[in-house]
Length: 311
Image 1 (cartoon, rainbow, N blue to C red):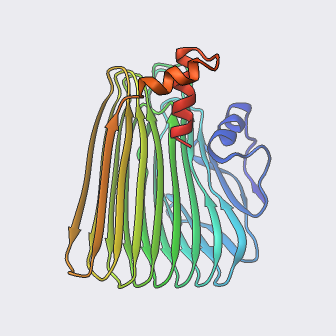
Image 2 (cartoon, rainbow, N blue to C red):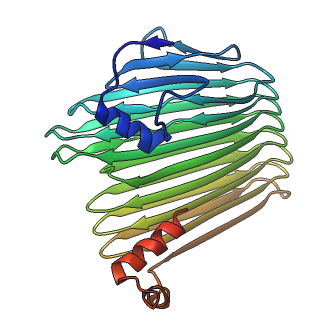
Protein backbone atom coordinates (compact mmCIF):
# COMPACT_ATOMS: atom_id res chain seq x y z
CA UNK A 1 0.00 0.00 0.00
CA UNK A 2 1.16 3.52 -0.84
CA UNK A 3 -0.03 6.18 1.59
CA UNK A 4 0.82 9.78 0.83
CA UNK A 5 -1.21 11.63 3.41
CA UNK A 6 -3.80 11.12 6.12
CA UNK A 7 -7.50 11.21 5.27
CA UNK A 8 -9.32 13.77 7.43
CA UNK A 9 -12.76 13.32 9.00
CA UNK A 10 -14.64 15.25 6.28
CA UNK A 11 -12.98 13.15 3.60
CA UNK A 12 -13.82 9.95 5.50
CA UNK A 13 -17.49 11.00 5.54
CA UNK A 14 -17.41 11.69 1.81
CA UNK A 15 -15.90 8.26 1.19
CA UNK A 16 -18.79 6.66 3.03
CA UNK A 17 -21.29 8.60 0.89
CA UNK A 18 -19.79 7.91 -2.54
CA UNK A 19 -18.20 4.49 -2.09
CA UNK A 20 -19.76 2.99 1.08
CA UNK A 21 -16.26 2.84 2.56
CA UNK A 22 -16.12 2.75 6.35
CA UNK A 23 -12.53 1.53 6.34
CA UNK A 24 -9.69 0.88 3.92
CA UNK A 25 -11.16 -1.46 1.27
CA UNK A 26 -9.88 -4.89 0.40
CA UNK A 27 -8.38 -5.51 -3.01
CA UNK A 28 -7.13 -2.88 -5.43
CA UNK A 29 -7.88 0.79 -4.79
CA UNK A 30 -6.76 4.34 -5.42
CA UNK A 31 -8.16 7.09 -3.19
CA UNK A 32 -7.69 10.63 -4.46
CA UNK A 33 -8.05 13.50 -1.97
CA UNK A 34 -7.81 17.21 -2.79
CA UNK A 35 -6.01 16.67 -6.07
CA UNK A 36 -3.48 14.08 -4.88
CA UNK A 37 -3.27 10.31 -4.55
CA UNK A 38 -3.75 9.59 -0.85
CA UNK A 39 -3.82 5.79 -0.74
CA UNK A 40 -3.21 3.03 -3.27
CA UNK A 41 -3.08 -0.74 -3.30
CA UNK A 42 -2.60 -3.23 -6.12
CA UNK A 43 -3.09 -6.99 -6.33
CA UNK A 44 -1.56 -9.82 -8.33
CA UNK A 45 -4.30 -9.42 -10.95
CA UNK A 46 -5.05 -5.70 -10.84
CA UNK A 47 -2.41 -3.04 -11.31
CA UNK A 48 -2.88 0.72 -10.89
CA UNK A 49 -0.29 2.99 -12.49
CA UNK A 50 -0.10 6.79 -12.47
CA UNK A 51 -0.01 8.44 -15.87
CA UNK A 52 3.35 9.96 -16.68
CA UNK A 53 1.90 13.45 -16.99
CA UNK A 54 0.12 13.15 -13.65
CA UNK A 55 -3.35 13.58 -15.14
CA UNK A 56 -4.81 10.31 -13.83
CA UNK A 57 -4.28 6.56 -13.61
CA UNK A 58 -4.34 3.40 -15.72
CA UNK A 59 -6.10 0.38 -14.21
CA UNK A 60 -5.01 -2.91 -15.79
CA UNK A 61 -7.00 -6.06 -15.03
CA UNK A 62 -5.50 -9.36 -16.14
CA UNK A 63 -7.51 -11.77 -18.32
CA UNK A 64 -9.49 -14.30 -16.31
CA UNK A 65 -9.59 -12.22 -13.12
CA UNK A 66 -12.67 -13.26 -11.10
CA UNK A 67 -14.45 -11.94 -8.00
CA UNK A 68 -12.15 -8.96 -7.45
CA UNK A 69 -12.94 -5.28 -7.03
CA UNK A 70 -11.39 -1.90 -7.71
CA UNK A 71 -12.25 1.25 -5.73
CA UNK A 72 -11.20 4.63 -7.17
CA UNK A 73 -13.15 7.31 -5.25
CA UNK A 74 -12.32 11.02 -5.27
CA UNK A 75 -12.97 13.37 -2.34
CA UNK A 76 -12.52 17.14 -2.20
CA UNK A 77 -12.75 19.30 0.92
CA UNK A 78 -10.72 22.26 -0.32
CA UNK A 79 -12.70 25.22 -1.64
CA UNK A 80 -11.56 26.57 -4.99
CA UNK A 81 -9.93 23.35 -6.19
CA UNK A 82 -10.56 22.46 -9.85
CA UNK A 83 -9.20 19.42 -11.64
CA UNK A 84 -9.59 17.22 -14.71
CA UNK A 85 -8.56 13.57 -14.28
CA UNK A 86 -8.30 10.86 -16.96
CA UNK A 87 -8.65 7.24 -15.81
CA UNK A 88 -8.33 4.38 -18.30
CA UNK A 89 -9.51 0.84 -17.51
CA UNK A 90 -8.15 -2.14 -19.44
CA UNK A 91 -10.32 -5.13 -18.55
CA UNK A 92 -8.92 -8.47 -19.70
CA UNK A 93 -10.84 -11.19 -21.50
CA UNK A 94 -13.15 -13.45 -19.48
CA UNK A 95 -12.70 -11.43 -16.28
CA UNK A 96 -15.53 -10.66 -13.84
CA UNK A 97 -14.96 -7.58 -11.65
CA UNK A 98 -16.65 -4.75 -9.77
CA UNK A 99 -15.42 -1.18 -10.17
CA UNK A 100 -16.56 1.47 -7.67
CA UNK A 101 -15.90 5.11 -8.48
CA UNK A 102 -17.59 8.37 -7.50
CA UNK A 103 -16.78 11.82 -6.23
CA UNK A 104 -17.74 13.71 -3.10
CA UNK A 105 -17.22 17.46 -2.71
CA UNK A 106 -17.57 19.31 0.60
CA UNK A 107 -17.34 23.05 -0.03
CA UNK A 108 -17.53 25.36 2.97
CA UNK A 109 -15.80 28.27 1.22
CA UNK A 110 -16.66 31.02 -1.24
CA UNK A 111 -14.91 29.63 -4.33
CA UNK A 112 -16.30 26.98 -6.67
CA UNK A 113 -14.89 23.45 -6.42
CA UNK A 114 -14.94 21.26 -9.53
CA UNK A 115 -13.96 17.72 -10.45
CA UNK A 116 -14.17 16.51 -14.04
CA UNK A 117 -13.41 12.79 -14.24
CA UNK A 118 -12.99 11.21 -17.67
CA UNK A 119 -13.23 7.41 -17.52
CA UNK A 120 -12.51 5.18 -20.51
CA UNK A 121 -13.30 1.46 -20.35
CA UNK A 122 -11.83 -1.10 -22.75
CA UNK A 123 -13.78 -4.27 -22.00
CA UNK A 124 -12.23 -7.48 -23.36
CA UNK A 125 -14.02 -10.41 -25.00
CA UNK A 126 -16.37 -12.26 -22.67
CA UNK A 127 -15.58 -9.97 -19.73
CA UNK A 128 -18.22 -8.94 -17.18
CA UNK A 129 -18.04 -5.60 -15.39
CA UNK A 130 -20.25 -3.96 -12.80
CA UNK A 131 -19.49 -0.24 -12.50
CA UNK A 132 -20.89 1.95 -9.71
CA UNK A 133 -20.48 5.73 -9.83
CA UNK A 134 -21.95 7.97 -7.12
CA UNK A 135 -21.76 11.75 -6.86
CA UNK A 136 -22.45 13.75 -3.71
CA UNK A 137 -22.09 17.32 -2.52
CA UNK A 138 -22.15 18.94 0.93
CA UNK A 139 -20.90 22.00 2.80
CA UNK A 140 -22.47 25.32 3.79
CA UNK A 141 -20.23 27.65 1.76
CA UNK A 142 -21.41 29.88 -1.08
CA UNK A 143 -18.96 28.25 -3.52
CA UNK A 144 -20.54 25.75 -5.88
CA UNK A 145 -19.95 22.02 -6.14
CA UNK A 146 -19.45 21.15 -9.81
CA UNK A 147 -19.09 17.67 -11.32
CA UNK A 148 -18.77 16.91 -15.04
CA UNK A 149 -18.09 13.19 -15.57
CA UNK A 150 -17.30 11.81 -19.00
CA UNK A 151 -17.55 8.07 -19.62
CA UNK A 152 -16.48 6.13 -22.72
CA UNK A 153 -17.13 2.40 -23.02
CA UNK A 154 -15.67 0.17 -25.75
CA UNK A 155 -17.00 -3.37 -25.55
CA UNK A 156 -15.55 -6.38 -27.36
CA UNK A 157 -17.49 -9.46 -28.43
CA UNK A 158 -19.81 -11.10 -25.87
CA UNK A 159 -18.81 -8.76 -23.05
CA UNK A 160 -21.26 -7.40 -20.47
CA UNK A 161 -21.25 -4.15 -18.56
CA UNK A 162 -23.74 -3.01 -15.93
CA UNK A 163 -23.54 0.65 -14.92
CA UNK A 164 -25.16 2.20 -11.83
CA UNK A 165 -24.97 6.00 -12.07
CA UNK A 166 -26.23 7.86 -8.98
CA UNK A 167 -26.50 11.51 -7.97
CA UNK A 168 -29.09 12.40 -5.37
CA UNK A 169 -27.80 15.27 -3.25
CA UNK A 170 -25.77 18.43 -3.11
CA UNK A 171 -24.30 18.87 -6.61
CA UNK A 172 -24.99 22.38 -7.93
CA UNK A 173 -24.28 21.69 -11.59
CA UNK A 174 -23.38 18.59 -13.57
CA UNK A 175 -23.00 17.46 -17.14
CA UNK A 176 -22.87 13.68 -17.40
CA UNK A 177 -21.73 12.64 -20.87
CA UNK A 178 -21.62 8.90 -21.61
CA UNK A 179 -20.97 7.08 -24.87
CA UNK A 180 -20.62 3.39 -25.64
CA UNK A 181 -19.72 1.26 -28.64
CA UNK A 182 -20.71 -2.42 -28.63
CA UNK A 183 -19.43 -5.24 -30.83
CA UNK A 184 -21.11 -8.56 -31.59
CA UNK A 185 -22.97 -10.11 -28.67
CA UNK A 186 -22.03 -7.34 -26.22
CA UNK A 187 -24.61 -6.24 -23.64
CA UNK A 188 -24.88 -2.91 -21.81
CA UNK A 189 -27.27 -2.16 -18.93
CA UNK A 190 -27.48 1.35 -17.44
CA UNK A 191 -29.51 2.38 -14.39
CA UNK A 192 -29.31 6.09 -13.62
CA UNK A 193 -30.79 7.72 -10.52
CA UNK A 194 -30.75 11.50 -10.33
CA UNK A 195 -32.25 14.11 -8.02
CA UNK A 196 -31.86 17.89 -8.17
CA UNK A 197 -33.07 20.55 -5.77
CA UNK A 198 -32.70 24.28 -5.11
CA UNK A 199 -31.46 25.97 -8.29
CA UNK A 200 -29.33 23.03 -9.40
CA UNK A 201 -29.08 21.94 -13.02
CA UNK A 202 -28.18 18.54 -14.45
CA UNK A 203 -27.57 17.43 -18.02
CA UNK A 204 -27.43 13.68 -18.60
CA UNK A 205 -26.42 12.53 -22.09
CA UNK A 206 -26.10 8.95 -23.35
CA UNK A 207 -25.07 7.89 -26.86
CA UNK A 208 -24.94 4.14 -27.41
CA UNK A 209 -23.91 2.57 -30.73
CA UNK A 210 -24.90 -1.06 -31.29
CA UNK A 211 -22.44 -2.08 -33.99
CA UNK A 212 -22.43 -5.89 -33.83
CA UNK A 213 -25.06 -8.57 -34.43
CA UNK A 214 -26.64 -9.70 -31.18
CA UNK A 215 -25.56 -6.62 -29.25
CA UNK A 216 -28.07 -5.03 -26.88
CA UNK A 217 -28.52 -2.02 -24.60
CA UNK A 218 -31.02 -1.15 -21.87
CA UNK A 219 -30.64 2.46 -20.68
CA UNK A 220 -33.04 3.54 -17.91
CA UNK A 221 -33.03 6.90 -16.14
CA UNK A 222 -35.15 7.75 -13.10
CA UNK A 223 -35.05 11.31 -11.85
CA UNK A 224 -36.71 13.80 -9.50
CA UNK A 225 -36.57 17.59 -10.01
CA UNK A 226 -37.47 19.63 -6.91
CA UNK A 227 -37.67 23.35 -6.06
CA UNK A 228 -36.44 25.46 -9.03
CA UNK A 229 -34.01 22.91 -10.43
CA UNK A 230 -33.66 21.91 -14.08
CA UNK A 231 -32.81 18.62 -15.77
CA UNK A 232 -32.21 17.62 -19.36
CA UNK A 233 -32.12 13.90 -20.13
CA UNK A 234 -30.83 13.01 -23.60
CA UNK A 235 -30.79 9.28 -24.33
CA UNK A 236 -29.92 8.01 -27.80
CA UNK A 237 -29.41 4.45 -29.06
CA UNK A 238 -28.17 3.80 -32.59
CA UNK A 239 -28.68 0.37 -34.15
CA UNK A 240 -26.17 -0.48 -36.87
CA UNK A 241 -26.73 -4.25 -36.95
CA UNK A 242 -29.14 -7.01 -35.92
CA UNK A 243 -29.44 -5.70 -32.38
CA UNK A 244 -31.93 -4.67 -29.67
CA UNK A 245 -32.05 -1.41 -27.74
CA UNK A 246 -34.30 0.19 -25.14
CA UNK A 247 -34.24 3.62 -23.52
CA UNK A 248 -36.52 4.87 -20.76
CA UNK A 249 -36.83 8.25 -19.01
CA UNK A 250 -39.13 8.18 -15.97
CA UNK A 251 -39.27 11.43 -14.00
CA UNK A 252 -41.11 13.07 -11.11
CA UNK A 253 -41.49 16.85 -11.22
CA UNK A 254 -42.18 18.87 -8.05
CA UNK A 255 -42.52 22.51 -6.95
CA UNK A 256 -41.24 24.73 -9.79
CA UNK A 257 -38.84 22.14 -11.20
CA UNK A 258 -38.34 21.70 -14.96
CA UNK A 259 -37.46 18.57 -16.94
CA UNK A 260 -36.69 18.12 -20.62
CA UNK A 261 -36.56 14.49 -21.75
CA UNK A 262 -35.21 13.73 -25.23
CA UNK A 263 -35.17 9.97 -25.88
CA UNK A 264 -34.14 9.15 -29.45
CA UNK A 265 -33.52 6.12 -31.64
CA UNK A 266 -31.62 5.72 -34.90
CA UNK A 267 -31.93 2.53 -36.93
CA UNK A 268 -29.41 1.94 -39.71
CA UNK A 269 -30.27 -1.73 -40.20
CA UNK A 270 -33.57 -3.43 -40.98
CA UNK A 271 -32.65 -5.96 -38.27
CA UNK A 272 -32.39 -3.35 -35.50
CA UNK A 273 -35.19 -3.52 -32.90
CA UNK A 274 -35.29 -0.31 -30.87
CA UNK A 275 -37.81 0.99 -28.32
CA UNK A 276 -38.00 4.15 -26.23
CA UNK A 277 -40.27 5.34 -23.42
CA UNK A 278 -40.59 8.66 -21.60
CA UNK A 279 -42.86 9.79 -18.76
CA UNK A 280 -42.87 12.95 -16.64
CA UNK A 281 -45.44 13.64 -13.95
CA UNK A 282 -46.14 14.67 -10.39
CA UNK A 283 -46.69 12.37 -7.46
CA UNK A 284 -50.24 11.07 -7.54
CA UNK A 285 -52.45 12.45 -4.81
CA UNK A 286 -53.89 9.04 -3.97
CA UNK A 287 -50.40 7.73 -3.24
CA UNK A 288 -49.84 10.46 -0.65
CA UNK A 289 -53.31 10.00 0.83
CA UNK A 290 -52.80 6.27 1.23
CA UNK A 291 -49.54 6.75 3.14
CA UNK A 292 -51.05 9.50 5.31
CA UNK A 293 -53.75 7.06 6.43
CA UNK A 294 -50.88 5.00 7.85
CA UNK A 295 -49.81 7.88 10.07
CA UNK A 296 -47.29 9.73 7.90
CA UNK A 297 -47.35 13.49 7.35
CA UNK A 298 -47.67 14.76 3.79
CA UNK A 299 -43.94 15.60 3.68
CA UNK A 300 -43.00 12.16 5.06
CA UNK A 301 -45.28 10.50 2.49
CA UNK A 302 -43.58 12.41 -0.34
CA UNK A 303 -40.14 11.36 0.89
CA UNK A 304 -41.19 7.72 1.13
CA UNK A 305 -42.48 7.78 -2.45
CA UNK A 306 -39.36 9.49 -3.78
CA UNK A 307 -37.02 7.10 -1.95
CA UNK A 308 -38.88 4.11 -3.36
CA UNK A 309 -38.89 5.61 -6.87
CA UNK A 310 -35.13 6.21 -6.83
CA UNK A 311 -34.17 2.79 -5.45
